[in-house]
Image (cartoon, rainbow, N blue to C red; front, side, top):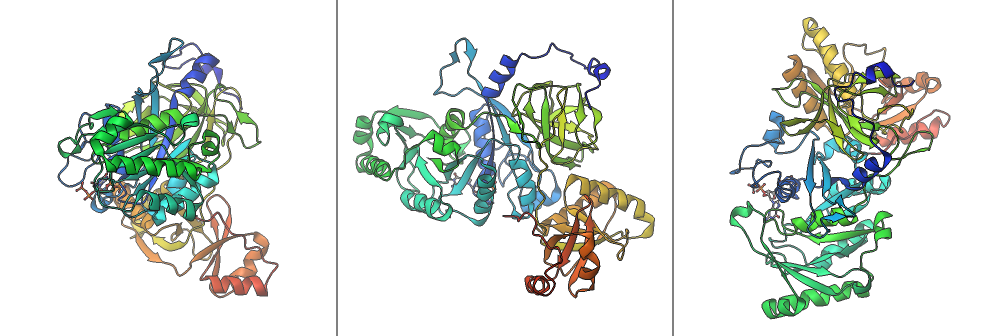
Length: 563
Ligand code: G4P
């Protein structure tokens, strides 16, 4: 179906169509990335530090709301505040003029537009994170210098690898005692098979962070090019002043500490740990930066690296394998749907990432899954509680659409030239619970809430004839998703549901032919998911192995693992 031309002309800002050149150069200056890390590695602190460097905030403490600091912007639910974790995904956009790049090239402004897409840190929300990672072009893997690679970082890294997303590694908290830099690199190399190629090497051991040695690139690979010495600011609230010194002056100032760093940098070259852009983009190597998000040391270097090395938005393959080029007519992918993000705005937001063309607020787009037109009158950027109306957006940008009830994660929007992007796979659930309305009088509200949370993908909703409609089964990757359901039902629908855990541990895709036989087995029950997929829930892996052995003709296919 094509876009209705009549409605398109009703656009609130029916600007002239952007030229292909304009879209391409807008795409080229964009970098869209997410930070992947284990809880507590410093993601919120780094987000804030990046915002400080981009002058979005004037003092650290505005976004991040930990003890003793200013009010919280990014937290949106009581539960989230209580646990100090980020449940929702939001996006922060800012302009950034790299201090490394020339101010303009051929008369074109070289200010970059950075889109930082937030990911939930807790492993229970890994499905959500997976969806977010479909919207980015690069990832920053944030590692705590004392703890090294932690389980959630590993899982998220595997998602990046699976999706071919290049990863920049940041070793954080270098101001605190931790492992040696070489130990940390070995761990990355050995445990995930990613060759770390440091761009900046720490001067001073963990706990005595003096500055960064910039390693040379290409013909100067491994050479100590300069010393960037940082000065602390009170409470790390401001950008840390930098001095740029030659290696000779560095040696005079830091003596053995500098000599050791320079020697280690040479060692890295001897073992082939120098940056190679092609290998980085192919996901085989990862540039490494040592930093302290809290002191704002190395933060500018992270931004400059993103600008210099991370890929800009590129063509995306459609479901039929044809590429949608960035300068094709507008298209976007919905990667996240969220209602009730803020009690002050009780609405439902669908977040889309622009894939091609220009988005103009008010334009009417086509929803590929239904073929229906969709008017984009209310388009926003959302970061925590702050909402700003979006007038235009280009490839790589993230836009929140208000009250977009038909949109679900994985859906495509487009104008003119029809396109549909591949769906986002849902994860294999490992936790199951029955959801019941507290009383029959609240049933209508209950039903509405279930449908809403299901379409947002908060949990997967399963039903079968035996249990009936009044007590659907929730399936989740992590049990905390059930708490989100309970909290949201109460806050947004005034329903206090009863949640009873169900004794299954695995789900397998099955078919109608296998259903009767499977339902006869002990420890097995077949359900229909709301997307029509039949799932057999099984009590444990031994039961599954037994059935597969005894009844090999039954269909029991694994789902996408939660990595
Ligand atoms: P997260 O979003 O990844 O969960 O981590 P978050 O930024 O909340 O940081 C977790 C803790 O680590 C915080 O301490 C934070 O201050 C601290 N932190 C983050 N980056 C650095 C760093 O570069 N150096 C040091 N030394 N600490 C860092 P907290 O005690 O939980 O909170 P707060 O009271 O310090 O705010």
